[in-house]
Length: 356
Length: 269
Image (cartoon, rainbow over the protein chains, first blue to last red):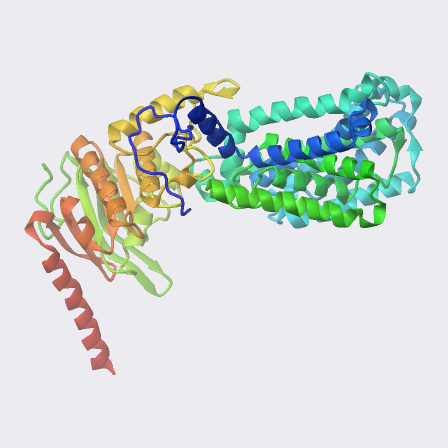
């Protein structure tokens, strides 16, 4: 609020450009490039992520840069965070949150499993039904939040318990193997071994690219930002804010179901204890580290993607360092806070003037 | 200005062809409180009318009725010579009546040009045609004399005055013919205020937009308005052309009212 851009002529002056550098020639160009870069909201998290990757890469070269580890890092750890984070970014920007997404993740594979084993549906149909479960759960979250007026924080705690309860009930709390017949379809979602082990990463990259464009270059994106930035103003302009929120809950539900199915196929297990709150928390942290405002109105999908890489690198890196499980939480939590503090303070230096 | 003779009895004469808005015998009660008491008001094309009065005098209620936010209990509203029942804010807007609030209108996280095109975006389906929107927004702001560093900056980075200017420009861009500015100078520095006043002056020069400025600090708006209406206790007690009155006269009236109220209270006690 307090930051004010100097008055100038409106005509054709581009907004970018550092212009603070006093030198000339190449030096100024570098300074200016640095200025433009520094003003991008994803800059901080990119720097921190690259630094971490380099550090782990150089200090533990042979293990960290091996193909097995890169698959672990990107397909197993990063992709699930990034995919769910897409949904959470959209929801956070429009002023909502989904705490139930991890339980959609739990339930969706069971829907697919029982569609195959009990109803003998074709695997592709069963997978689509699993994804549909996520979309429907998202719609219910939207309905309770938008139509019945319950804050989404509460709505999704409630629906999360219900979804988790359904998964435990229909599975009798027993894990099952993925039916071998389904692997033909499942490999497209990701299974171990070349080349299908790269599928989760491919899904993450493609979905991130698509939704980055949706957020920055389409009406849906503008209206999502409007709904969270100034609800009253958005309504005044005639935007159907409810529709935007329903849609973003449904997108998030879809992402949760997708990641649940991917994990089931990748581990060859449909587990009623998979999912839960952890994937949701990782996704929300990735979003916020990547520059999405908790209070809505601004955020980026690319930032969340980088945030997901950062979290995956931390998890994987400490694993390789051989940090034992007990103190891992201390280190991990501190690392998240350091990344976040760097983010907030650098944003303040940049004068971006946004709330976290 | 070609407005009709303002007179002291604005409801006496019939509407003139140049009249865009007329409010006749409008009253409004909230429970036991009479907010508006048989109000009469008129506005000519291209005219700038200052609606002055203390807090709680009834200015805001009157504005809410004119912009379609709430209906009057009694009385008529005539827009462009036709009696109209304003059903909603959207309905009033479709008739060219738009109200500009300082902070309510714009989306802070969006660029200036996205704000100007909100809900009427130019598309290269399915993507936004940002280049086209930037070009038109830039042209429009330039034409209106609104100075901002770039149409690409986020509204969050603009000052209060710049935001107000963008909101006014957007309303005009959306074809508003009767613009209601609610306390446009509130909480604004001298330079900022001057920018808004310049904008209103420019609108006046265009001639096709009429403006009602609501203010409690009349010294600031006195220079740019054609006519002054004073609202006191739910009634318009004073209607003169700006050049026929003065800040001193208005002050005298307001102080007088205050003294009278004080005396009445003492008399009752």
